[in-house]
Image (tube, rainbow, N blue to C red; front, side, top):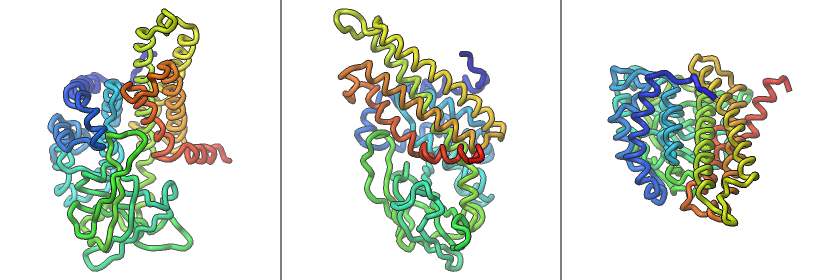
Amino acid sequence: MRRTLFTEDHEAFRGLVRDFVAKEIAPYYSDWEHAGRTPRSVFEMLGAIGVFGIAIPEEYGGAGQRDYRYNVVLQEEAARALVTMSTVRTQLDVIHPYFLEYADSEQRARWFPGLAAGTLLTAIAMTEPGTGSDLAGIRTTAVRDGDHYVLNGAKTFITGGLLADLVIVVARTSKDPDNRRAGLTLLVVEDGMPGFTRGRVLDKMGNKVQDTVELAFDDVRVPVANRLGQEGAAFGYLGHNLSQERLTVAVGSVAQARAALDATIAYVKERKAFGTPVASFQNTKFELAAVAAEIEAAQTMLDRAVVELVDGELSSADAAKTKLFCTEVQARAVDRCLQLFGGYGYMMEYPIARLFTDARVARIYGGTSEVMKVIIAKSLGL
């Protein structure tokens, strides 16, 4: 079906990203997977061509384009080349919006030029060893001491935490027995602050090119000048960007499902079984036809949600519906596609195996499928 989501400017940006991915990412991607991280130089190159500064105001070296459709293009072109840019996506789609919304003028002058240039890398630390979806249960504490907060606690599953220069930490600055959501604050911890340490790099099933680490804070003195927004208001801030965060997962899911379909079509046309191309079997045709129809439905739903997000009209329930549907479609699509590869689909040298393992987390991060269903049920009055 014809898509009407993008303008000529978006398509020009697509060409820029496609060339970059082909030259600077795809040839080296396997090495980065084995290393478990994306090199810093890649972020700086992305900054040099303007990708990291898309939404950063022009006075700080960015383009001032707070149009989420550019972020969509970035994910689609990565998937098209059978790679992911997970850490890049997390910074642009999830973390930069917090700086853009809540940084004051002094913080903007201090951090925004580096954010735009890709020389200041970021992470956000919400999840704790005993606290996942229940953000109100955060135990990391920050106690005010003059012009500083004294930060103590531990975080886990932190994307990009290994290389991050700035880590937005969600910490509890006060307790209200009648409101568990009150008293959370965003503090920006800088690399090198005494007491801030990085733990082990976690060995994940998929998304190997994305570093995911544990972080620890032992009496870290964080200046009050590094607080984002108001003290105690973080829960509301976190909810403000959740729709975009969840849409980001959905965008990746649909793009990667489409990549799986394209890779499978190419494979079954070449692979022979019983002396004939696998593509000639009725089962192959029916399976791929069903996958294509589901992807088209997910794409249409997703494009509508992106339009509503850009227009500032996307509800949390509709974001949840989109994430739930698109991630479930991805799961079914990559599973059915892998089956058509037979035993080769189980070998990591084939991209379908990586697409399969990468897909599993989509139904977990950004809010599990079960949490999405709870949100949707509430919107139905249930």
